[in-house]
Length: 136
Image (cartoon, rainbow, N blue to C red; front, side, top):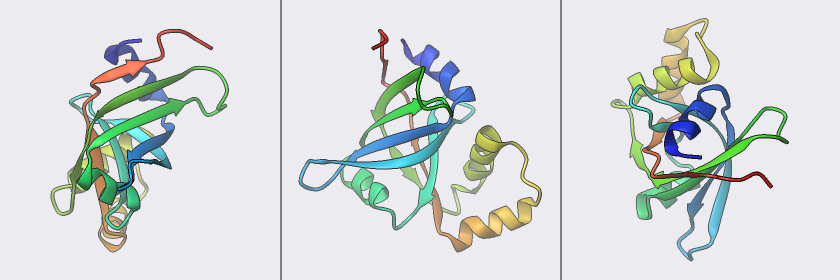
């Protein structure tokens, strides 16, 4: 699978596990919901104090495996170099992320207030590598 195929899969499948690197080099895994932004980059909403944010700020290399809601079946792994987009710059991206992953929110003002209250930010990365190329 190439990056274009991975993006096609990510348009309709959002459940995944993100891998970042701890300070000692071991992986730290986090269940996440991932989507794509208008530029085809992977975006994930999280909280500023989350360990994955601290890890990415120290070492921006990330891997993400995304699978179907059924869990078993098709899946894809993507890799890239992530950046953290913090509020207030992240707000439009957080709205776009929600729309891509879940559709329209019933109260966008409430959503925006929750993003500020919860100290949300975006993890964003271009897909540098995608796989698998075979099932199994």
